Image 1 (tube, rainbow, N blue to C red):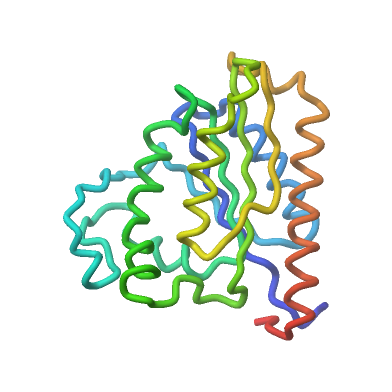
Image 2 (tube, rainbow, N blue to C red):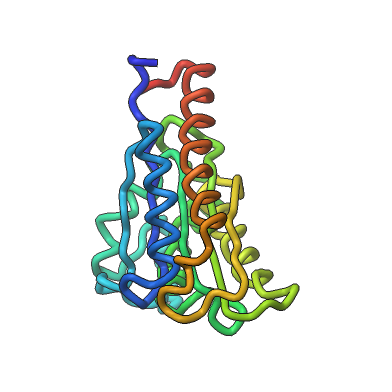
Length: 209
Protein backbone atom coordinates (compact mmCIF):
# COMPACT_ATOMS: atom_id res chain seq x y z
CA UNK A 1 0.00 0.00 0.00
CA UNK A 2 3.05 2.26 -0.16
CA UNK A 3 1.74 3.90 -3.33
CA UNK A 4 -1.57 4.86 -1.75
CA UNK A 5 -1.80 8.41 -0.46
CA UNK A 6 -2.92 8.24 3.19
CA UNK A 7 -6.65 8.60 3.90
CA UNK A 8 -7.65 12.14 4.83
CA UNK A 9 -10.13 12.53 7.70
CA UNK A 10 -11.74 15.82 8.70
CA UNK A 11 -12.23 15.76 12.48
CA UNK A 12 -14.74 18.37 13.64
CA UNK A 13 -14.61 19.34 17.31
CA UNK A 14 -18.21 20.46 17.90
CA UNK A 15 -18.16 21.37 21.59
CA UNK A 16 -17.99 24.96 22.83
CA UNK A 17 -15.99 23.73 25.84
CA UNK A 18 -12.24 23.49 25.31
CA UNK A 19 -10.74 20.32 26.70
CA UNK A 20 -14.15 18.90 27.48
CA UNK A 21 -15.35 15.32 27.35
CA UNK A 22 -16.00 15.17 23.61
CA UNK A 23 -12.57 16.68 22.94
CA UNK A 24 -10.99 13.82 24.89
CA UNK A 25 -13.14 11.30 23.02
CA UNK A 26 -12.10 12.78 19.67
CA UNK A 27 -8.45 12.76 20.72
CA UNK A 28 -8.73 9.00 21.31
CA UNK A 29 -10.29 8.55 17.86
CA UNK A 30 -7.50 10.62 16.31
CA UNK A 31 -4.91 8.50 18.07
CA UNK A 32 -6.35 5.46 16.33
CA UNK A 33 -6.49 7.21 12.95
CA UNK A 34 -2.87 8.30 13.12
CA UNK A 35 -1.63 4.94 14.40
CA UNK A 36 -3.09 3.33 11.26
CA UNK A 37 -1.48 5.88 8.94
CA UNK A 38 -4.38 8.26 8.39
CA UNK A 39 -4.00 12.03 8.13
CA UNK A 40 -6.14 14.16 10.44
CA UNK A 41 -7.47 17.61 9.58
CA UNK A 42 -8.75 19.00 12.91
CA UNK A 43 -11.43 21.67 12.89
CA UNK A 44 -12.14 23.45 16.19
CA UNK A 45 -15.46 25.19 15.64
CA UNK A 46 -15.28 27.15 18.90
CA UNK A 47 -12.17 28.97 17.65
CA UNK A 48 -13.72 30.01 14.35
CA UNK A 49 -15.50 33.15 13.27
CA UNK A 50 -18.60 31.41 11.97
CA UNK A 51 -21.79 33.13 10.83
CA UNK A 52 -25.11 31.27 10.93
CA UNK A 53 -26.94 30.65 7.66
CA UNK A 54 -29.07 33.67 6.74
CA UNK A 55 -31.22 31.96 4.11
CA UNK A 56 -30.12 34.32 1.38
CA UNK A 57 -30.47 31.44 -1.10
CA UNK A 58 -27.74 32.82 -3.36
CA UNK A 59 -26.13 29.38 -3.11
CA UNK A 60 -29.05 27.93 -5.06
CA UNK A 61 -27.69 29.74 -8.12
CA UNK A 62 -23.95 29.29 -7.63
CA UNK A 63 -23.46 26.41 -5.21
CA UNK A 64 -21.33 28.73 -3.10
CA UNK A 65 -22.05 30.50 0.18
CA UNK A 66 -21.81 34.29 -0.09
CA UNK A 67 -21.05 34.75 3.62
CA UNK A 68 -17.35 35.31 4.20
CA UNK A 69 -15.81 34.04 7.42
CA UNK A 70 -13.42 31.35 8.66
CA UNK A 71 -15.50 28.63 7.01
CA UNK A 72 -15.15 30.07 3.50
CA UNK A 73 -11.74 28.54 2.66
CA UNK A 74 -12.76 25.18 4.14
CA UNK A 75 -15.53 24.27 1.70
CA UNK A 76 -12.97 22.81 -0.70
CA UNK A 77 -11.69 20.50 2.05
CA UNK A 78 -15.24 19.45 2.83
CA UNK A 79 -15.53 18.23 -0.75
CA UNK A 80 -12.10 16.58 -0.99
CA UNK A 81 -11.52 14.60 2.23
CA UNK A 82 -12.16 10.86 2.38
CA UNK A 83 -14.13 10.75 5.64
CA UNK A 84 -15.56 12.83 8.45
CA UNK A 85 -15.75 12.61 12.22
CA UNK A 86 -17.84 14.84 14.47
CA UNK A 87 -17.53 15.02 18.25
CA UNK A 88 -20.54 16.62 19.91
CA UNK A 89 -22.13 16.77 23.32
CA UNK A 90 -25.91 16.52 23.48
CA UNK A 91 -27.58 19.84 24.27
CA UNK A 92 -31.37 19.84 24.50
CA UNK A 93 -31.34 16.57 22.53
CA UNK A 94 -29.42 18.12 19.66
CA UNK A 95 -25.97 19.38 18.70
CA UNK A 96 -24.58 22.62 20.22
CA UNK A 97 -25.25 25.94 18.50
CA UNK A 98 -21.77 26.19 16.98
CA UNK A 99 -22.04 22.72 15.47
CA UNK A 100 -25.52 23.45 14.10
CA UNK A 101 -24.30 26.72 12.58
CA UNK A 102 -21.49 24.83 10.83
CA UNK A 103 -23.89 22.20 9.53
CA UNK A 104 -26.46 24.77 8.40
CA UNK A 105 -23.81 26.63 6.43
CA UNK A 106 -23.38 23.51 4.33
CA UNK A 107 -26.70 24.43 2.74
CA UNK A 108 -24.55 25.65 -0.14
CA UNK A 109 -23.33 22.09 -0.67
CA UNK A 110 -26.91 20.82 -0.44
CA UNK A 111 -27.83 23.29 -3.20
CA UNK A 112 -24.81 22.19 -5.20
CA UNK A 113 -25.93 18.57 -4.98
CA UNK A 114 -29.71 18.71 -5.18
CA UNK A 115 -30.48 21.95 -7.04
CA UNK A 116 -27.54 22.40 -9.40
CA UNK A 117 -26.75 18.67 -9.78
CA UNK A 118 -23.05 19.35 -9.30
CA UNK A 119 -20.58 16.99 -7.62
CA UNK A 120 -19.97 17.39 -3.91
CA UNK A 121 -17.45 14.61 -3.32
CA UNK A 122 -14.59 15.75 -5.53
CA UNK A 123 -11.85 13.61 -3.98
CA UNK A 124 -10.89 9.98 -4.48
CA UNK A 125 -13.85 8.42 -2.67
CA UNK A 126 -17.35 9.25 -3.90
CA UNK A 127 -19.37 7.42 -1.21
CA UNK A 128 -17.64 8.76 1.85
CA UNK A 129 -17.83 7.70 5.49
CA UNK A 130 -18.81 9.49 8.69
CA UNK A 131 -18.13 8.77 12.35
CA UNK A 132 -20.14 10.27 15.22
CA UNK A 133 -18.67 10.63 18.71
CA UNK A 134 -21.25 11.90 21.17
CA UNK A 135 -22.12 11.87 24.84
CA UNK A 136 -24.57 13.34 27.30
CA UNK A 137 -25.46 13.46 30.96
CA UNK A 138 -28.88 11.85 30.64
CA UNK A 139 -29.41 8.11 30.35
CA UNK A 140 -32.65 8.30 28.35
CA UNK A 141 -33.29 5.95 25.45
CA UNK A 142 -33.79 8.83 22.99
CA UNK A 143 -30.78 10.85 24.14
CA UNK A 144 -28.93 10.61 20.83
CA UNK A 145 -31.87 10.59 18.41
CA UNK A 146 -31.61 14.28 17.49
CA UNK A 147 -27.83 14.28 17.12
CA UNK A 148 -27.87 11.14 14.99
CA UNK A 149 -30.54 12.47 12.64
CA UNK A 150 -28.75 15.79 12.20
CA UNK A 151 -25.46 14.03 11.51
CA UNK A 152 -27.06 11.57 9.09
CA UNK A 153 -28.54 14.26 6.88
CA UNK A 154 -25.42 16.41 7.12
CA UNK A 155 -23.49 13.43 5.75
CA UNK A 156 -26.06 12.93 3.00
CA UNK A 157 -25.32 16.43 1.75
CA UNK A 158 -21.62 15.54 1.65
CA UNK A 159 -22.15 12.29 -0.29
CA UNK A 160 -21.29 10.37 2.85
CA UNK A 161 -23.00 7.77 5.03
CA UNK A 162 -22.85 6.95 8.75
CA UNK A 163 -20.12 4.36 9.21
CA UNK A 164 -19.45 4.16 12.94
CA UNK A 165 -20.28 5.76 16.26
CA UNK A 166 -19.38 5.90 19.93
CA UNK A 167 -22.26 7.11 22.11
CA UNK A 168 -21.81 7.44 25.87
CA UNK A 169 -24.54 8.17 28.43
CA UNK A 170 -24.08 9.56 31.93
CA UNK A 171 -21.11 11.74 30.98
CA UNK A 172 -21.66 15.37 31.93
CA UNK A 173 -19.14 17.16 34.13
CA UNK A 174 -15.73 18.00 32.69
CA UNK A 175 -13.45 15.02 33.22
CA UNK A 176 -16.24 12.44 33.50
CA UNK A 177 -14.99 10.88 30.27
CA UNK A 178 -11.78 9.73 31.95
CA UNK A 179 -13.65 6.98 33.79
CA UNK A 180 -15.05 5.68 30.48
CA UNK A 181 -12.05 3.50 29.67
CA UNK A 182 -14.01 1.19 27.37
CA UNK A 183 -15.53 4.11 25.47
CA UNK A 184 -12.15 5.72 24.90
CA UNK A 185 -10.68 2.41 23.74
CA UNK A 186 -13.66 1.94 21.41
CA UNK A 187 -13.08 5.37 19.86
CA UNK A 188 -9.40 4.63 19.30
CA UNK A 189 -10.21 1.27 17.71
CA UNK A 190 -12.81 2.93 15.49
CA UNK A 191 -10.17 5.35 14.21
CA UNK A 192 -7.89 2.49 13.23
CA UNK A 193 -10.72 0.55 11.61
CA UNK A 194 -11.83 3.55 9.57
CA UNK A 195 -8.37 4.04 8.08
CA UNK A 196 -8.07 0.33 7.36
CA UNK A 197 -11.43 0.37 5.57
CA UNK A 198 -10.47 3.43 3.54
CA UNK A 199 -7.11 1.97 2.55
CA UNK A 200 -8.79 -1.22 1.40
CA UNK A 201 -11.32 0.72 -0.66
CA UNK A 202 -8.64 2.89 -2.24
CA UNK A 203 -6.54 -0.16 -3.08
CA UNK A 204 -9.46 -2.00 -4.66
CA UNK A 205 -10.55 0.85 -6.92
CA UNK A 206 -7.00 1.96 -7.72
CA UNK A 207 -7.57 5.59 -6.68
CA UNK A 208 -4.56 5.85 -4.43
CA UNK A 209 -3.75 9.46 -5.15
